[in-house]
Length: 124
Image (cartoon, rainbow, N blue to C red; front, side, top):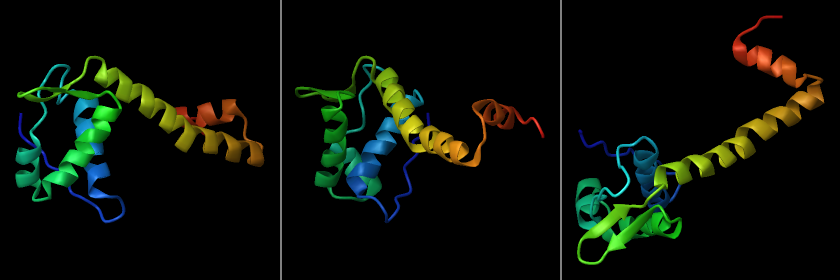
């Protein structure tokens, strides 16, 4: 598997982007259950950023229970991490996209059936 490193943006803190990048690797299966994630040193050298920033990003995943530390060995992907990321993202997807869509549809008098038809590509 080739290593893909993210392109960082200026709108979010780097440690958040690192956490999201690693989370993406978990949700896509690039990092599997029980698999070791790259070390803080390796990531900081490869990404050319401060190790403390990398550590802060990894700690977000630790706090979420997605990765855990094996003393003297490094950080590893936790059991059910993929499923947990997917569950969290489904909730966020609903809150960020579906709920606003349904609210706007209601204001416009568009029914849920109309929305389903739109998603299927049905033309009116």
